[in-house]
Image (tube, rainbow, N blue to C red):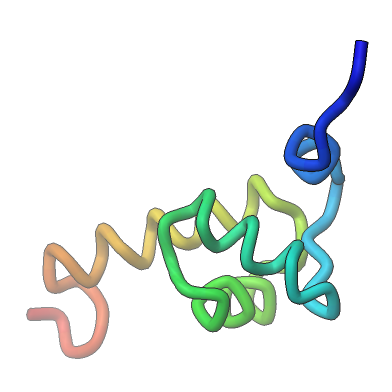
Length: 71
């Protein structure tokens, strides 16, 4: 059984912001830009689950007016 490069990236325990392709891969997976992934990592660290949770929180907060002025 062969493991594809995409599968290997998903198994990584951390997001490597110094690896352009890794960063873009995670950004695509989260549905955001690479810059947004970098910002999330600066806030919560480089663990994918934490980054994903943060990005969902920010997305929901901005959409509902909870962030940047409370409406």
